[in-house]
Amino acid sequence: MAEDKAETQAFTPGPGYRQFKGRDEFPFNILHGTLACAIWIGSMHFNVSLLLFSFLFLPFSKFLLVVGVLLIFVVLPIDHNSKFGLRLARYICQHMSSYFPATLHVEDINDFHPGRAYVLGYAPHSVLPIGVVTLAERTGFMPLPKLKCLTSSPVFYTPFLRHIWTWLGA
Image 1 (spheres, one colour):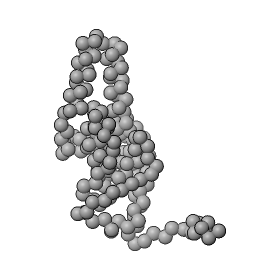
Image 2: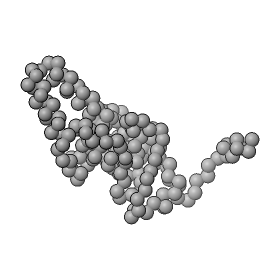
Image 3: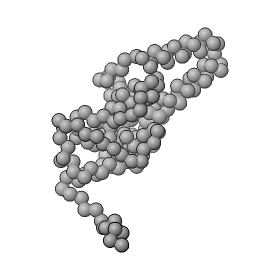
Image 4: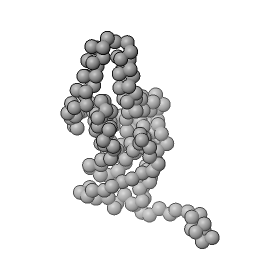
């Protein structure tokens, strides 16, 4: 009974509490949100579609050429400070944060020191963590200069997806 009463009490935020809502921080546009989602998540579908199309409709030598080009993109070094990449990552973060109803609650934003390292977790998450864009460095919600999000290693062996996620700060 006492546990139920404790759970029903309202949360009173402290002086450093900050709530970030994607739709309040960034302008909402359904077209830009859909395009940002297609760029971020669609890169995997693009790879599969390209391989399937080239295998079914192109001569075998051209299929091998497509596979070779995709393998080059797997080992091609990524420029972490690419202007194009950083602009694309900022576009994805801002429009995905407003497209999905993402809300980030920070209990005390003053406790974060830029010179220290932190591990942040969020729930719920899935194989494709869509909500991680609220924690990405390009969104600007958290006052940390080197905010990185952890991801599984197969992401970095997928052409185009590895570029996008590296620019996002994974």
